[in-house]
Length: 212
Ligand code: GRF
Image (cartoon, rainbow, N blue to C red; front, side, top):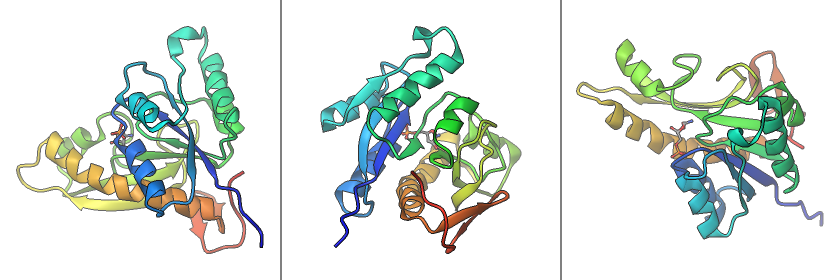
C-alpha cells in the first residue's frame, strides 16, 4: 500500500493567530490531513508566534526591517518555508504584500483568507468597508495568492448576514467564526488535488491540479 506523505503547511501570520489555531485544531481532530511545518511571523509580538511556540511548532520571525529590500524579505520567507519542505503556504492574517518572486516560488500553492466576499472590499478593514457600504451580506473568501492584492482565483466563499445594529466588532466576529471552518476545509480541498484553474475559476472535480 502506498503511504502518502503528510502535506507540510507553512503558515504566515502577523497577529492574533485564531486562523492558525483553527488550522491546528482541524489537524488535531482529523478534519485536515496535514502538518504545520513552520509558522513565520513578520511581527515579534504576534500572539500567533507564541501559540506556535507553545505547541512546539517551529516558529520563525522574519521582520521586514532586517532586510534592505522587499525582495530580500520575500526571499528570506521563501527560505524559511523551503527549510521545512513546505508544500502549501497559508496566509492567516499575514499583513504584508508578497511580491512576484514569492508567488513564483510557490506557484498555485499559496492561499489567503480574507474577511469579505471578494472582489468586494479588498485590502484593509474589509469589515468596516462592508458596513460603510451598507451591504446586507458579508462573508469570507479563501483564494490563491497572486501579486495583485486579494485578487487571485477564488477557492471557497461563505456568506454571513449583516444585521441592523452591527458594529465592526460584531460583524468581524460573525465572519471570523466562518473563517475558522472555511480555511481548514479549503486547505484540505486544495491538498486533495483534482482541481485546475481555468482563467479566474478554480474548477474542482477535474483530474489535474495539485500542489507540490
Ligand atoms: C482574519 O480576519 C483574516 O481574514 C484576515 O486577518 C484576520 C486574521 O485573524 N486576513 P487571525 O490572526 O487569524 O486571528
